[in-house]
Length: 303
Image (cartoon, rainbow, N blue to C red):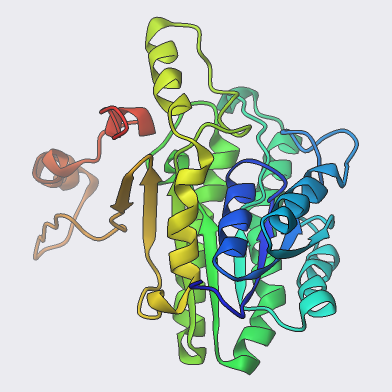
């Protein structure tokens, strides 16, 4: 019962990874606000309270406490209502899990402004809005934990996901800024880059033999494998863990590096474009980061 007495808001917890995190936090003793608008994977079409209600029912069946919120993370006033739901039902808030997301994959030169803005709005703006709504409460009580979902699509790269990749890398920077600004109030902020077969990964192409093999590997990884790390990061056992980026892949846990200078070159008389081409480029090029995708870096089978 690592979260005994705590109240958690888990966005996008009507299914997939979010649902498993909500279930695990409830099992660990937390009272949970299950937030989900019940929209399609692309965020379009009618919304429904059914997914959130189903997660709440599962929590209650297992002896936990939960209530639902169907407000959108992508609107500032609506995000305020999500956090307020924690106070209305349970009187406090201790944990925010920013998991809500949509996909509108498109190759970059065909991506529309609407596809870009919709994904940025839910992932990046939504993570800021909900986190910011909880911040005054965390500051006042001198405690709190944020767990944000990033992605290797942003940390490493992927095809056809400029909107999603930009949002997810932005979330990593947001988390680091929160960790720096809120440390004085004993508030922590960390990221998880999850691997799992869920609605969010079901759109991965599986046409070529290589693509089919990759999807087959991902299908072996259930969303529940990501929940234990989220529970740990939200608990007091992680009181000294902040500003970090983790990855979960089946039974593996990764700690990701963060950008730092890897090589430098100095020229006392300064640089010209020609001198850069002649001297700096040959010196720096061996340390260039290759143009890789997530699947290139994580090339071994999940273990």
